[in-house]
Image (cartoon, rainbow, N blue to C red):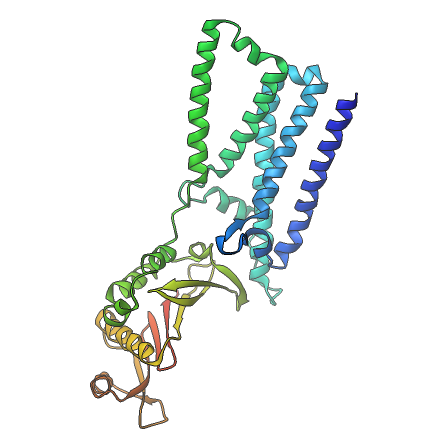
Length: 374
């Protein structure tokens, strides 16, 4: 009797802890405080990721497993049907996490879409369920399968111990050999599933490109930016909101999701902002900005201008401020090149449908734009 009371107390603590977290989450997601749950880090310079939501799902799985143990230890009828209940618990636990996780997705993203505009159209709950089922970042589709395997297998192990089934498996030499083979196969399956589930998802197009040039010398950007610009222009037609899933949230403006990334590019710290939409017919832009020393800013800016002309042809618009004038004057391509040769350019802006450049001695900024698909 005493053991049963202890089990019930432990189970109650697990249930209350899980319920407290699951009831607390919706308010945080409605307010956009997702970083408090999914993006916290521990360990100072070690930068250890700390995902409270993942921990809460693990706590929920532990609660289900302990509930199975408690029922199996006090009810012979439940224990007799243990394998069936093990699969039921696994499926029920995985389904609960799936539906609840997408409920949180809906609260967060609809909150971003709504912003200050209460008339904004918000995708329904079904939209998020279907998107999650179609989620295809690497092999992360196995994240729910891994949870199903963990809960079901843990329950089966508990049933095997309490029912005496494991003892029967090693009763004779032949049984011991068969058991060893089964355990070896199960070990390989679980290990493989775990590795698949824990494998890092491949980076999005934009993240992969930024990672490629993360530690490249800044001299490359000052003298030969063609490959980098070509890579950006190549992905501009296919980039979507999901490519920014690992970027930090910066709110919403005119129904555009604003996200940013503090990173290193060409060996220098840089903040990159993006403005994107769920609707592929809307435009998406990525904004890069360097604020380095004066000469480096100008060297990078003029290199980007020249390479963009080489890749995209003559700009739709060129505006130049010379060293002997305070006015930004609309200019021709020939006048721009003459100013570069004479070293008289103080500031220049160039516009194409695909890219906008802003260059002076204090900064170099450029937008990569995906025009609306209409």
